[in-house]
Length: 112
Ligand code: 5GP
Image (cartoon, rainbow, N blue to C red; front, side, top):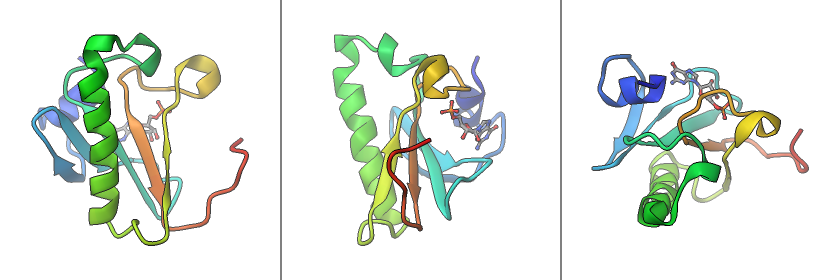
């Protein structure tokens, strides 16, 4: 079981911001911005490159959850960034698909 599945099951504590039937949003333990939370499917897909067409509805749900939770956290007016790290070169460290939502400061481009 991944660390994010354990958070969804409340086996590991986390600051949970919002939750739906098949997703959960919680604060990142090592925030990279004043607001930094993760949106995670409760069912583990290791990474976006391993999602299949049968996951399309869930992927859309995760994007909508990122936007609704960002609005809830007060980020809608000034904006925010949504990031998915995929695989080694992408900087992925937890093999359970997650969307990073970062806000509360101006983001640089290109990312490092
Ligand atoms: P990745 O590097 O895979 O894109 O992102 C993994 C993220 O998960 C990192 O930003 C890291 O800080 C966060 N993370 C890792 N372990 C935990 C944990 O136990 N709890 C929480 N809330 N976040 C975690």
